Image (cartoon, rainbow, N blue to C red):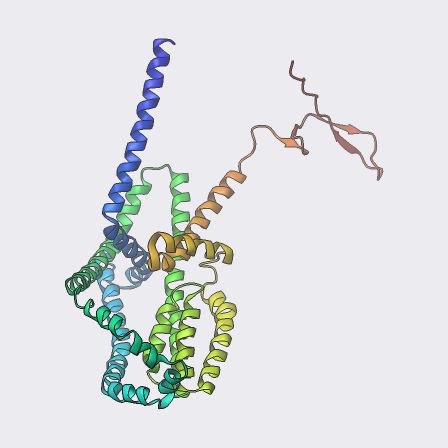
Length: 388
């Protein structure tokens, strides 16, 4: 082996070692900062969702300042979010107070076998089961006070995460156009225009999914509350809030909410349980065949099989957050793959071929007449020499 071959082999070996080392370093870096990465991803999705509103305000408003438009949009978003939280928290506090006040009576009725809960306890011998496992329940209850510090630490982390996500989203929206312009300046004009077009489609997918999914969840929660309130099922606000939240999870969210609401209905009465089941069956058809096609039209168009596969992979990687972001991520991948496919398909082959054996097209010669009396052409394909 010559010295040039030795140097080339050594160079390739060093490149491979460097790539492997960089990959491992990146893996450990992402793993060590996974919490921060999750905050950045969430902030990025919110920034993409709010950016069209900021751009619209900047163009229509007289001041024309992006920082002022960004501040105005975020203030309005915070006011709307605070209004929604207040709208849900007030009934929850009221119903929670009722639960605390009625808890002794509920327990006494359950022990005496009165009421719907008492009937269920008596039917399934739950009192006997509780008496047999009383020691185990006390032991489990004694361990609940141990992780108090962990709970407080988790609450503090959640508050810090919310503030961080808000600040990151604000800065991303504010400085986004400058960052995008600086990134596109690294490429020539055709490639930059292609990247801008694909990025616009991806942003449209994210915005359409987030706004559409929130709207569908609000509709689901409101209709659920109406049905539960009409049937006189207690704690309708609390159950409807749970149904609206889990409806954010694609495919399985509405089913999880329906199970909880149906159990609450059957606890009240058999008729209420049947009515709740019928409602959720009809609503599922309404959501799948009317709401989703109408709200997600021209924004998120992903095959259901692709959605299921994306959700399963995302849940395995990132839990509930992965399930919430699976559809927009799948839509982004689909947009990028389609752009690559369309660009590649539009390019001509180095040499044109025809037929299954990919014979190279040769010169065409005109025959005197065809079957219908008009001149016909035949393709003369020169024979390729067989390998010696």
